[in-house]
Each structure stands twice: as C-alpha cells, then as structure tokens.
Length: 499
Image (cartoon, rainbow, N blue to C red; front, side, top):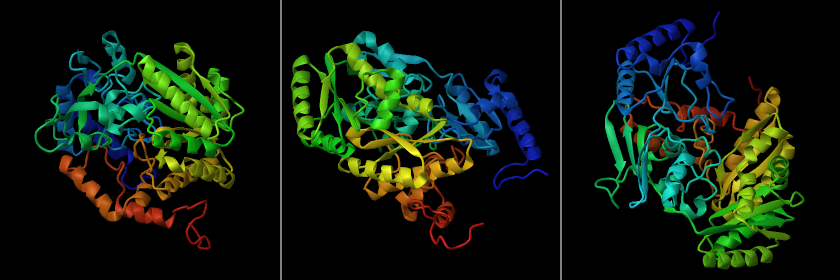
C-alpha cells in the first residue's frame, strides 16, 4: 500500500498527470528541451538546501523567451504549478520542486545581449553567471558590484529572485540597487517589463517589488544591470580581536564614524581556523574574531580611509592589525571569507547555513546568544557574516545521517532566526525564505501582513501556480507551527503529551 501525503499525487495519478503534461508540452515546444524520465528529473529534486527533496512531473529547459511563454501557457491551461530554477545554488529551498509541478530551468538562457560602456549597463539573459558579467565588462574598466560567495556559479536570474547581496554590498548596494530593468513572462504567458533604461519609468515603480519575489510573480527572461568603474586601487585591513563582542562594537563604531568601507566582514575563531586550514589566507587563528575592512578608490582616498579605520579599530580593542601590501595579498584575504562555506564542509559531515539580519549594534549580543544555543542544542556553530549590514550567516555543524542531530540543527536555526527578530532584525537578508524559513515568517509578520503579501501575489499570479507554497505561510500553517513552536529549546506547554 502506498502512503500519499496530503496535497500529493499517488503513483498512478502522478503518471497520468505527467503524461498529460508532457503530451501537451510536446505539442508546443521541441522534445529536446523536456525531461520527464526519473533518471533525468532526479538531479533537479533540490537546490542548495539538499535536505529537502521532491521529484517533479517534468523539467523544461527553454532556449528562448518564446518557449518560456508557450510552456507557461500550457501549464496555466492545465493548472500545473511551475517552479523556476537558475543554477540551483539557492540555500532556502526556493527552487525545490512541487511533486505535481514542472521545474522551469533558465540555465540555457545565457546570452550576453549587450554591454554598453557609455551608459555603463549590461543586458543579459537570466542564465548568465554573476561573475561572468564582470568578466565581459572588464575590458571597459567596469564591473558588476553585487558579489555573492557563489558568484562563480550563481546566475543573475536567481540573484534577481532572491535580491542577492555579497561582501561589497555595504558600499555598492544589493541586487535591487544595481538592476535597472527586468523583462519577464507572467504565468499566463504575457511579456511584461519592470523598470527602465531611463533615469525613471512611467507608472508605478514595481521593479523593487519583483526583485526578491522568489519566483512567485513572473519568470525573468532578461535583466539590465548597472556597471560601475573598477576602482584604481583597494586595500583590506585584517583586524584581530580577543573578544567577539569587541569586534561587533568595532563594526558599529566604523559606521558611526561616517566610514562606509567597500567591504566589512567578520568571522569568529571556529570559522577562521577552518578557513585557514583550507585556504591558507594568512588569518590570525588565535583571535576570537577577525574583521576584514576594505577601502577602494583613488590611492589618496584609500590611504586616508585605511588610516581612519585603523584608528577606530585600535580604539575599540583590535589586538592586531594587518593591511594588505599587494593585490595578491588582498585577494588572498578575501579568498578565505569567500571559501568559508566549503571550509565548513571539511570539518563536519553536514552544515546548515542560516541567514538572518540584525542591527549592527546587536552583533555581539547575537553571537553571545548563539554560543549559549551551542550548549543548549549540543551542536557546534561557525559564524561568518556581512558585518557592515548586520547580515549573519551562522553555520550549524551536524551529522545529517543522525535524525536527532538533524532535528536539533533545525531547531537551532529557527531559534537563531527568531532571536534576530527579537533584536529588531529579520529572518532573512539575502537567501530568501523559500521553504526553509516559511515557519519563521509566522513569527516575523502578523496574519494581516501575511494576507497583504498574498494579495500582492494574486495581483501577479491569480491562479497561484508560480512557486506555490513558498515564502508566504498560510494562517493554517502558522496555527500548526504555533502549537509546536520551540523557543530556546522548549515547546509550549511541555507537560502536554505529543503525538
């Protein structure tokens, strides 16, 4: 006897629905862009949050916008949910398939449409990698500023959907600050454009609504980004602290002094040691925390800013300060920070990367709370984060083959996110909500606010077929979560029996 979860198709119904969808799609698009055999669709069962997996009815890999239109029109007519997918590097389960749905991969839409060095823009298709934009702009002395750690692999379409950040976004902004125009296709197959190449666009400014919408509003088919001139020079300070709270206070002090570094990143001792063993970046492995503070611009600007930042860091307890003396050394300092996630994979069978944001003044307090949680949940945690904008990335280390450890890691992560809310922050900074943080949305937002979010989604996708059941929790889900809500390791009414 086959057990079928609520809302999922039985094996027989799955096969019938799959045949119906594939037959309809084959009448609209070439067979070469469709995958439906299990050995072909299994690789698409998850994104970077590999703990949650589902196999879709089929996968479509369109080669142009017209094919995207036709695929969406077929799915809309049949009532088939659609999950858009980029490179699959997302960490919140935003691209996890829906079992009775289609995965729409934009991986083959990877043309560089135009680079305009005079307007300082690049127009690209969604499958173009983040780093590739800077590579094609480099001959003109330009680059694209948002630089997620996964920039070598992640795509601009996914960056738009998640409003991705990066180590240099403190000074230059997130994806939303660097995108001028997005062309997209609605669930009904209508082509729409958001933003403009001009300084302003007519009508309502919906570009910022689309960016960060996690694929729930429309399918991105073309993006125009802002390029900026490469700075003449850059240097980075590596500052060591004998106490993590001192490091957090130094971050707030730098911003309070009117300094906006090009990058301001922090790592605690467990993270620093794991990274140093992996990359050999020259980090101080005895420090309780290190800060990386970068300045870029003209040589005169950089020299002045480095002096000012050094003064602030010393005043707030930096035990050791080292300034990069060459471009290779600067890149080596940053290579450590950008390799923090793979370094975690070398010291633990599995790790769970969280993504919360807090006011800068609360960095030290949150790190102290996380240290307490390590004892409560009996799990280790490495902390790396975009200190300048308070975007935290705790890496909870656990063994995924141990079900109890996995449950404790999940509870640990939820506790961190809800601590962020308590401290005046949010449950996500750049990874999105997806399925990972959907329960924590119940803590962050009121029922009325969540109803408003659903109203916005209905305005774009009345049928509710685009990336359904992601990012916005229903009232019923939040009611169920409230009954099993763990706060600081404890369920509500712990004396009641649980079934």
